[in-house]
Image (cartoon, rainbow, N blue to C red):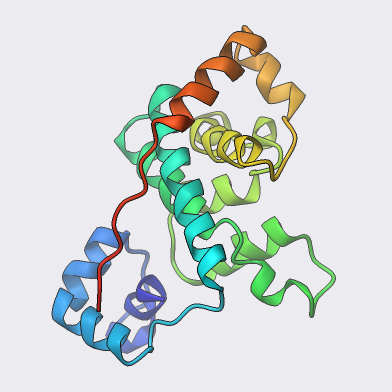
Length: 183
């Protein structure tokens, strides 16, 4: 919601911003005020929100383990947090949830790396080579959370599949969920 607000034409020309820039543009005081008035409420229950933060933390940790650079790690984390946003409108349209989520993220002005990681969360092997690390990290986080099954093509492209699964399982256990800012 913060990214959507900052990327809107209300703040000038619509443009893509990253989460850090969005917070700087709005300021923590305004974000706290909006949060306390439920203006930033999301359509998810507490379980859904904690599940998304768990996936985000795992995706960040796994992206580091897969050799992702700082941008890929940030993209994987944000993609993990927002990977299921397509379910907000999925029931009303005959569209695949990751496709709907990627469309929403594009309208909200998120980066191509985040959009493509969400779009290819089920099959990171279909992502562009430069975006496969973030997409693969999100995919692995979702598989290790029991939400998906492995994309065999992607897994095989990583080399020792059995060894990789074991290493990713261990890395995901070390992922920590960041504390959420209180209103």
